[in-house]
Length: 167
Image 1: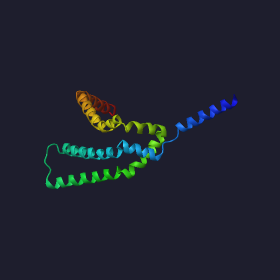
Image 2: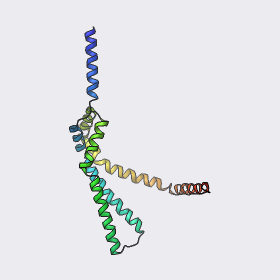
Image 3: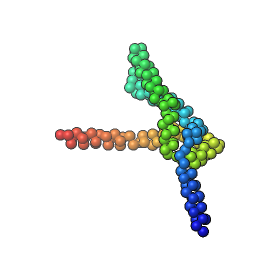
Image 4: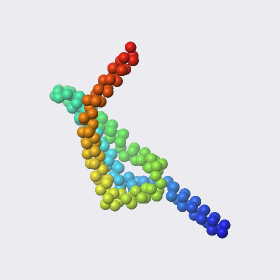
């Protein structure tokens, strides 16, 4: 009886430690490849470029910059984009992903995710999620646009309250 009990305890111990085994670098790299994380970073850089263009247009307030100003704007955008390219380079980002995934997931969990993301449904999720997130953000912006006057009123009240408290 003790032999059976000790064997069961040993099996339970081994299975629980095996399930909690940290994810390997190899399996994490496979998951990052299957989920196209590097492509997502590339897309982020493109979106950053678009955000910079929008910010410049807002700053210009409809005014047309002189050729000298236009060159300065282009130089600033080029420098900002180069900085983003450097800071979000895969060689810099990949070690962070490897560390965080290793800290967060077990080998079994990574394996399960790999199994899912390799299915047609998993691939559909990977491919459609960026567009879904864009659409979601657009709809949320539309929903919140009705609250803009109220938010402005809250800001004005806050400023008035701060001004009154500083007297």
